[in-house]
Image (cartoon, rainbow, N blue to C red; front, side):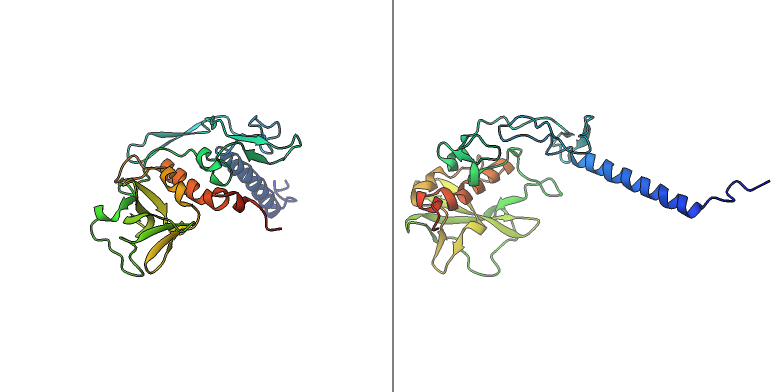
Amino acid sequence: MEPFFADFDLAQLSLYLFWAFFVGLVIYLQRENNREGFPLETESGEISSNQGMPSNPQETKIFKLPHGRGDAVVPDHDRDKRKLALEQNNVANGAPLLPTGDPMLDGVGAAAWADRRDLPELDGHGKPKLQPMKAVKGFEVSAGIDPRGMKVVSADNKVVGTVADLWVDVPEQLVRYLEVELLDKKSCLVPIPLAKINRNSVDVNSLYGKHFPSVPKTKSGKQVTMLEEEKISAFIGGGNLYASYDRLSSPF
């Protein structure tokens, strides 16, 4: 009686099984990846008829968020329903969308922001990551220039306020924002990468003086939410393009 595997190559079978497993793994991981950011949409906001391969998962998964933040359901099919102040300048597919109002206030184009949760980002211990330095023990400026007390100067060389405090990322031990007390005694946050700290002043070249009263504010003086961070960074960063018409025009 001939052995069952007499003329069969077990090594080749193992190779074929590995290939099949690997292809299945790639398809599974790609479908799991499609739980967020899908379904694809057209420029007009409608669901695209071409969603690609493989198909998007329809069954939901529930993830328990730490620190009592509830559940995250994916896919949640919760689409952004904001009415964007944009219009297409041409009927051709892929034509650009142009702002119809003030893009910095409307949050579109280069000043666009993501609709993140209106809650502060937490560290591993459940405490807000970003806090003013005056509220955190053990933090000080150990290198470079301490900008607190310096005048803040806009792109049109107007003094718009004074640096009142530094907001630090506690677990990362980095300064993320400058807290600026404006001339009207209200405060706003300026992302540290968008500020230039000089010897005697701080320059914010993305905005003109008239824009600072419109910088999005925080609801609390002790913490900033993820949504507020989005709006603040989008407004100030968007000024690099939208603060004046001259910045929109091409030198060529």
